Each structure stands twice: as structure tokens, then as C-alpha cells.
Amino acid sequence: MSLNAGHPTPKSVHSLQVTDATLSWRNSDDAEERGSTHEILFTIDFSTAQRPNYVVCVLREDADAQSRPFLLDLLQADEIPAELRNGRLINGIPPHLQPTPSNKVDVVVSTKSGTGRAQSFWQAVLQPLLQAASSQPIVEQYNLVVTQDAQSVRRYAKAIDKSSAARTTILLSGDGGVVDLLNGREPAPDAPLPLMALLPLGTGNALFHSLHKPCAATPGPTPLVLALRTLFFGVAANLPVFEAKFTPGSQIVTHAGGGNQAALQLPHRQHVTSLYGAIVASHGLHASIVYESDTPAYRAHGAKRFGMVAQELLKLSHPYKASLDVRPPAPAASEDKFERDPHETHGYILVSMVSNLESGFTISPASKPLDGKLRLVHFGAVSGDRALEAMAKAYDGGRHVDVEWDDGERVRYEEVGEVRVVSDEDDERWRVFCVDGTIVQVARGGGMSVARASRALLRILVDERARA
Image 1 (cartoon, one colour):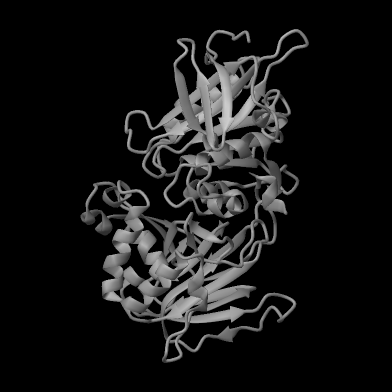
Image 2: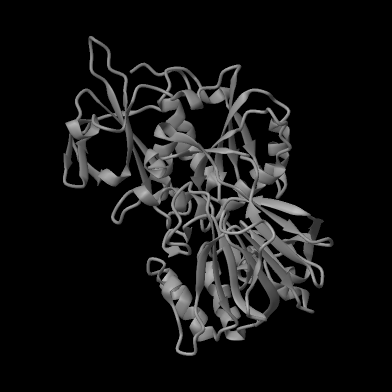
């Protein structure tokens, strides 16, 4: 294979073999190396009629290697086993990743998502992988957006609506980047829907894990391996979206920097009337966990931050004073037929459009990828032990939805058409709501309503099994 200047250079290998779940090869010094077949992204076929020529792309990950968490191997060989020809074989860059006058391709790198690995992933993996798959210097034609602050993705989303061209956005981010894309847009009625490719570099990555649940396995490929396969082989689908509307005086609240608990007292505020989401809207324990764990000090712990804050909140077992009104899904009820939940205090109110909040945390076991259905998960102001029991069973395949205690208290779980929650709290600490990780604090007596959005706002690349 002839590579232009600036292309990544594959290393020549021979004796490529697949045995069980192991890929082995010999390098130019005839030394044997091994890897897992779960680490194989795909094989690029550069063969001609005169000469076979393949490049096997392998991603190795080491979360403990702070300086080099990712290693992309490009293994060039004249012969490969049949297992590497079947299924994941490409001949170049797929059309949705080809920048043309009528199709723009952007790469958005969210530097603060998760534990801050997005930029490293772009430089060490995605950029050389895209270049390796192309016979031309393609990466230079991409528009690279590296976030500078919390508003960077929203500014980007607003800017792309000024173009009438089709667009693919490769988003290196967590769930927060998705909600910023949804809410930053101001599309014209006839504007083409952007196509989003999500590479999960956040903390919980709920949307990614839920969409890829049909192809996840243990042992199996990592989320980033699955994401890169979807990037090259995925199919486009409309992303189901809900709209959360808030009462007057509501504000988006984000913590100031500082890396300590004092940051809780220095929030940044922005008035809000509604937000679009694709994952969850909540009040109670879930919203408080997200809110109080979103400080620089807690974020340094990655996904563990949620459990750390949850332990503290479960000790308090605060009863959230609020009213909860639920409308069944159409056509079961008219638009104005709401049922009032009998509880005057609540522990957990969550409306979900996805199955998982984390890879192992199944909040809505009945949810399927792309089904677009809203489901309510709720329990009253139970003790910390009971709340912990329910959360533990959510980590056991979503068995929390069957929990019922001896006194008749239970976990309520059902498909819904719309949910309304109005807070009756005096302390603003407990008047917080969560939409896909964005925290909204309402005024006294304020609240939120959640229903499916009336229009599509984004398309998303998914594994074809998600559409089954």
C-alpha cells in the first residue's frame, strides 16, 4: 500500500491467525504478538488484481495508562484468515464520512467529558484510523471543533443550522454533548437533519449503551470498539427525542470550577423554558445525584462519582415534597386525562426513553433501541436501605421494576404519554430536575412536564441490530 505524506504507517506482519478468541501474528523480527479478537475493529482491503493487500485495524485500551490509554495497531499483510474477510471488511471511507461540497463532516472533541480522554482518542485512534482507511489525505478536509468551554457544542450546533448541506457530526463526548447538540440547534423547517456518530467518552454514556445493547457481550468488544465499528458500518435512524417544559423562573444550574465542595455554593445560572432530551428526565434522588456529583473533584473519579454521592444522599433519605401527575400513552387516554399519584412525598421520579443509564445499570428493561417510548420509574419516600435495594436490583438486569415491600410500597413502572411534576420544597437544594445530565432548578411551586417531542431533530448512526 502506498501512503501519502502524513498517513499513518501500517506495520508489515505475517502468519496472521485467529484461534478461538485470540488474534496472533509475527512482526518483521519474526517475534509473535497476540491480541483479542474482540479488539479487532475491521479489515481494510487495498488489494488489486495483481496483489492482495490488507490492513487489520486493532484497538488496544488500558485505562490505567494515563499517558497512553489507547494504542491503534495497523497490521498490513498479504494474506489474512477467512475470519477477517467475513463481515467487517471495508474498501475505503463510507459515504457518510466523505467530505464533499454537498456533505460536510465535523469532528467535535469534548475535552471535559468523562475523565478528559476525548482529545487523546482523536489524536491516537480516530484521526489515524480515518486516514488509514482512505487513499487520499482526507482528515485535513474535516472541520475539527475542540471545545473550549461549556457552551462550545451549543455554539457549534447553532452554527451548522446556517448551512443547507448534509452533515455528519462525529461526537467524541458523553451524554451531555448530545443534549447540547439537541438544544443548541435552531433549524429551519426544511433543513436536513444532521447525522450524529457518537463515540462514548463520557461518564455514564447512557444513550450509547442503550442503543448498542443488542450487540454488547461479556466477554466482548469494548464500547469504543463497538462505536468505531458503528462509525464505519452503521445505518442512520431518527433519534427519538422528548421535550421537558419548565415553569417560569426555572434556571439551568452548573457548578463553578474550584475542585471542592465550596463550588456547590457558586452555581452559574441560565434561564430556561424547555429542553430536548434523548435519555431521561428526573426529579428526586437521581437528579440530586447528578447535580451534587457534577464538581471537578467528583468528576475526577469518573462513573464512581455517582455511587460516592448516592451513599451520602441515601443516608439523608430526603422525602421530596411534590405532586406527580401521569397521562397514559395515546390512545389510552385523551390529552387532558391525568392521574394523580397518591404519594405526597417521593424518593425517585424518572422518565426514561432508554434502557440503561450505564452499561450495567438497567433502568428500564422493557425499553428497546429506537422504540421512542417513554417509561416512568417511581417510588415513594422510602428508607435509604429500600432505595439501595432497588438500585442494586437495577444493576441486576433491571429487576428493581418487580420490587414490592411488605407494607405495599413498590416500584411503579409503566409506559406513559406525559408526566408532570410540581415541587413543593422550600429549600432550593431539593428543587432540582435533570434532563440528560443538565440540571434545572425551579422556583418555589415550580416544576416540569415531559412528553415525546413533536418532531425529529437528529439522526444517529446505529448498529443495524438496533433496528431489528
